[in-house]
Length: 293
Image (cartoon, rainbow, N blue to C red; front, side, top):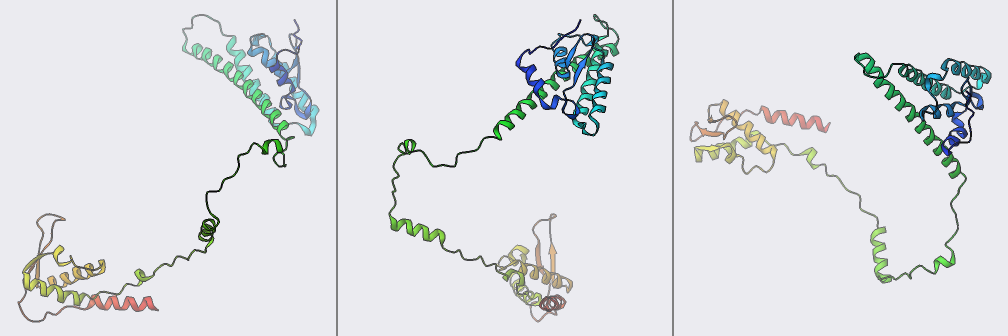
């Protein structure tokens, strides 16, 4: 029995006219078998529609003919087309092997897996055909659209008459004021560098302030001692001053719970000057000099 391809449905015609379905070198790849003679794409279509049994197709002969086409094309053979043929031929080979399994109840799990693989392979063949049809449609659409150019003319008079009249609800003076506001040059934003060169806070001076307050109050919280600090640097300086006073035995600390309120208690004399180390002030002064250099 010999199946001779006829014009068939539009899908078959689209596949036969698709340039990507041609063999290497631009020639259409035709298959010559005992039961089929025609384009390779038509063979796939007949198999997918169950009009031709895959078990009756000599895949080895199809492969030999395709290799002959590659050799005939010489240096002009298409690698992409060859890769597609290898994928489809491998799918058909697996599908043919799965079809040869006996039908009916299957007890062997391996045979059941092969039957499931047969359905997956057939679905892959249908997917390949669908993508090929979509690719052909996109190719024709791109080619048709590449020959179209937009009109670079004005609106025709018959359409221009349909446009509504333009009504301006703003006066010329108001429009000029808005335009001047929009077109006026904007002032460049100036970044202040004051925060980069903040004046150093003297630890010894802050210690004098804390001594006066603690002598009057006796016991105060750290929050109360630093509540009027104008900036974080002053708070840090007062904390360092408290450490110096604690090292000199002038104050004591009490904190009931971890991270709780810190209470400072005065334990020094009620009168007289205290010897406060100036090591923090000297270090800050040296840092400012190095920044200035």
